[in-house]
Length: 141
Image (tube, rainbow, N blue to C red; front, side, top):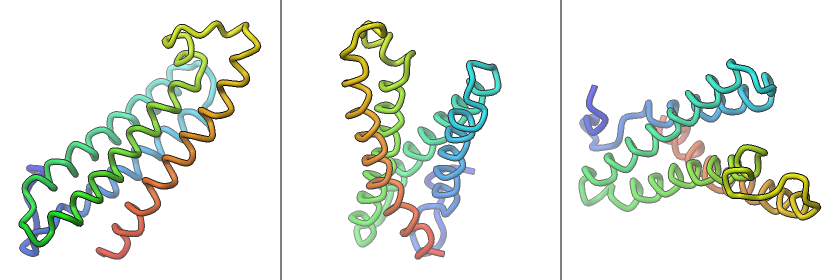
Protein backbone atom coordinates (compact mmCIF):
# COMPACT_ATOMS: atom_id res chain seq x y z
CA UNK A 1 0.00 0.00 0.00
CA UNK A 2 1.38 3.38 -0.97
CA UNK A 3 1.83 5.73 2.00
CA UNK A 4 0.27 8.59 0.09
CA UNK A 5 -2.86 6.62 -0.75
CA UNK A 6 -5.60 8.19 1.23
CA UNK A 7 -9.28 7.77 1.93
CA UNK A 8 -11.83 9.73 -0.09
CA UNK A 9 -11.74 12.49 2.55
CA UNK A 10 -8.15 13.32 1.51
CA UNK A 11 -6.74 12.50 4.94
CA UNK A 12 -3.57 10.54 5.54
CA UNK A 13 -3.95 6.82 6.21
CA UNK A 14 -4.98 6.15 9.80
CA UNK A 15 -2.43 3.40 10.26
CA UNK A 16 0.40 5.94 10.40
CA UNK A 17 -0.58 6.80 13.96
CA UNK A 18 -0.63 3.16 14.96
CA UNK A 19 2.75 2.66 13.31
CA UNK A 20 4.15 5.52 15.41
CA UNK A 21 2.62 4.16 18.62
CA UNK A 22 3.83 0.64 17.84
CA UNK A 23 7.35 1.87 17.17
CA UNK A 24 7.48 3.82 20.42
CA UNK A 25 6.13 0.77 22.26
CA UNK A 26 8.87 -1.42 20.77
CA UNK A 27 11.52 1.09 21.86
CA UNK A 28 10.03 1.23 25.36
CA UNK A 29 9.93 -2.57 25.69
CA UNK A 30 13.46 -2.90 24.32
CA UNK A 31 14.95 -0.23 26.57
CA UNK A 32 12.93 -0.55 29.77
CA UNK A 33 11.57 -4.10 29.89
CA UNK A 34 14.33 -6.12 28.23
CA UNK A 35 16.91 -3.47 29.16
CA UNK A 36 20.19 -5.37 29.09
CA UNK A 37 22.76 -5.38 26.31
CA UNK A 38 21.09 -8.42 24.77
CA UNK A 39 20.19 -9.08 21.19
CA UNK A 40 16.48 -8.80 22.06
CA UNK A 41 16.98 -5.25 23.31
CA UNK A 42 18.87 -4.21 20.20
CA UNK A 43 16.30 -5.88 17.94
CA UNK A 44 13.25 -4.37 19.67
CA UNK A 45 14.75 -0.90 20.00
CA UNK A 46 16.09 -0.93 16.45
CA UNK A 47 12.83 -2.11 14.93
CA UNK A 48 10.94 0.42 17.04
CA UNK A 49 13.17 3.28 15.94
CA UNK A 50 12.78 2.24 12.29
CA UNK A 51 8.98 2.11 12.69
CA UNK A 52 8.96 5.62 14.20
CA UNK A 53 11.13 6.88 11.37
CA UNK A 54 8.89 5.19 8.77
CA UNK A 55 5.80 6.75 10.35
CA UNK A 56 7.43 10.19 10.28
CA UNK A 57 8.41 9.80 6.63
CA UNK A 58 4.90 8.59 5.81
CA UNK A 59 3.37 11.58 7.57
CA UNK A 60 5.74 13.94 5.75
CA UNK A 61 4.74 12.41 2.42
CA UNK A 62 1.07 12.69 3.37
CA UNK A 63 1.56 16.37 4.22
CA UNK A 64 3.18 17.05 0.86
CA UNK A 65 0.34 15.29 -0.98
CA UNK A 66 -2.48 16.77 1.13
CA UNK A 67 -5.14 18.92 -0.48
CA UNK A 68 -4.94 22.60 0.44
CA UNK A 69 -7.69 22.43 3.05
CA UNK A 70 -5.83 19.71 5.01
CA UNK A 71 -2.25 20.91 4.53
CA UNK A 72 -2.03 22.87 7.78
CA UNK A 73 -3.32 19.97 9.89
CA UNK A 74 -1.08 17.47 8.10
CA UNK A 75 1.89 19.81 8.58
CA UNK A 76 1.24 20.03 12.31
CA UNK A 77 1.05 16.24 12.54
CA UNK A 78 4.23 15.86 10.48
CA UNK A 79 5.93 18.18 12.97
CA UNK A 80 4.66 16.04 15.87
CA UNK A 81 6.00 12.89 14.23
CA UNK A 82 9.36 14.57 13.58
CA UNK A 83 9.42 15.55 17.25
CA UNK A 84 9.11 11.87 18.18
CA UNK A 85 12.14 11.10 15.99
CA UNK A 86 14.04 13.96 17.65
CA UNK A 87 13.11 12.65 21.10
CA UNK A 88 14.56 9.24 20.22
CA UNK A 89 17.76 10.87 18.97
CA UNK A 90 18.12 12.83 22.22
CA UNK A 91 17.36 9.65 24.18
CA UNK A 92 20.13 7.85 22.30
CA UNK A 93 22.44 10.76 23.13
CA UNK A 94 21.74 10.22 26.83
CA UNK A 95 22.74 6.52 26.78
CA UNK A 96 26.25 5.20 27.35
CA UNK A 97 26.57 4.33 23.65
CA UNK A 98 25.29 7.75 22.64
CA UNK A 99 27.61 9.58 24.98
CA UNK A 100 30.56 7.54 23.70
CA UNK A 101 29.51 8.42 20.14
CA UNK A 102 29.51 12.10 21.14
CA UNK A 103 33.01 11.67 22.57
CA UNK A 104 32.06 12.12 26.24
CA UNK A 105 34.26 10.39 28.80
CA UNK A 106 31.88 8.17 30.80
CA UNK A 107 34.20 8.17 33.81
CA UNK A 108 34.09 11.96 34.10
CA UNK A 109 31.93 13.58 36.76
CA UNK A 110 30.35 15.89 34.19
CA UNK A 111 28.63 12.90 32.54
CA UNK A 112 26.12 12.80 35.38
CA UNK A 113 25.43 16.52 34.94
CA UNK A 114 24.93 15.98 31.20
CA UNK A 115 22.52 13.07 31.52
CA UNK A 116 20.00 14.92 33.68
CA UNK A 117 19.19 17.64 31.12
CA UNK A 118 19.26 15.13 28.25
CA UNK A 119 16.82 12.84 30.08
CA UNK A 120 14.51 15.75 30.81
CA UNK A 121 14.77 16.99 27.21
CA UNK A 122 13.86 13.72 25.50
CA UNK A 123 10.91 13.09 27.81
CA UNK A 124 9.62 16.64 27.29
CA UNK A 125 10.05 16.54 23.51
CA UNK A 126 8.37 13.12 23.34
CA UNK A 127 5.42 14.26 25.46
CA UNK A 128 4.97 17.47 23.48
CA UNK A 129 5.14 15.52 20.22
CA UNK A 130 3.41 12.22 20.82
CA UNK A 131 0.45 13.37 22.92
CA UNK A 132 -0.93 15.79 20.28
CA UNK A 133 -0.38 13.14 17.59
CA UNK A 134 -2.20 10.58 19.73
CA UNK A 135 -5.11 12.95 20.41
CA UNK A 136 -5.41 13.75 16.71
CA UNK A 137 -5.37 10.04 15.87
CA UNK A 138 -8.09 9.30 18.41
CA UNK A 139 -10.20 12.28 17.28
CA UNK A 140 -9.86 11.23 13.66
CA UNK A 141 -11.25 7.83 14.52
